[in-house]
Image 1 (tube, rainbow, N blue to C red):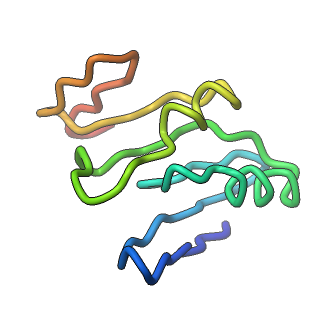
Image 2 (image 1 turned 90 degrees about the vertical axis):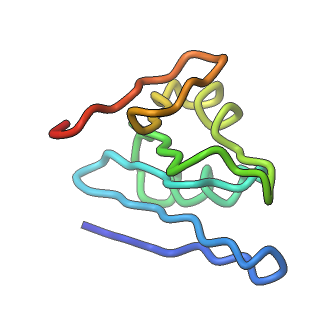
Image 3 (image 1 turned 90 degrees about the horizontal axis):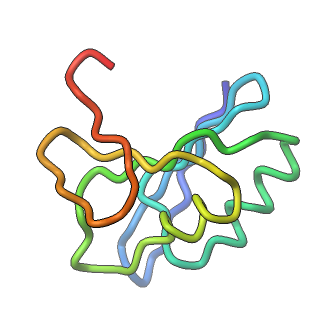
Amino acid sequence: MKVEQIYTGCLAEAAYYIESNGEAAIIDPLRETEPYLERLKADNAKLKYVLETHFHADFVSGHLDLARKTGATIVYGPTAQPNFEAHIAKDGE
């Protein structure tokens, strides 16, 4: 399993890329999605999930773009109420 922090200093924002056995998840991606797509290609991995820990008021997320480009499922926690297609995770999932 590979876990990589992708830190953007000017925003003090950390996204995470997790890959295992050809499947990947990205947590809290920035709007610029090309670095994530490049990592997926380099690892020959399919993006399965884009996880958002919360709605971000401090930066624009790349979750919608990544989901559209890869077919990945966007995942939010149980209290989120997004106005777009997403999986609302429940405790224990």
